[in-house]
Length: 83
Image (cartoon, rainbow, N blue to C red; front, top):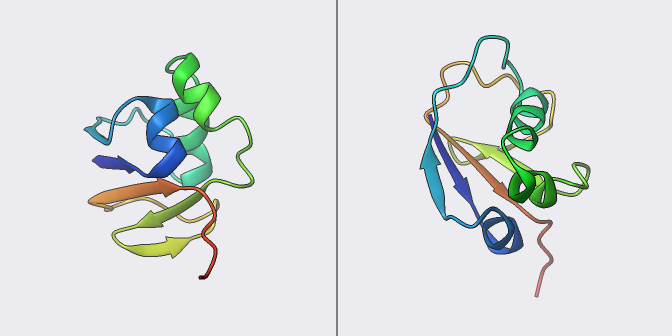
């Protein structure tokens, strides 16, 4: 699965994207975030406030309880404002 990071999430993780093989039991965006946080301090820092980081599955904005089964790409980004 491809993970893509934008804005300060990208800066904190230290990469724009990556391919990952998810372990068993990662079924939702929230599960994925918890797993990512266990991968190192850069991920823990990027997702320290899970409530404000947004996610999109295959270019569709989703909530943390969204199922990720069959997803090709999951993107993470901070809240956006209009302008």
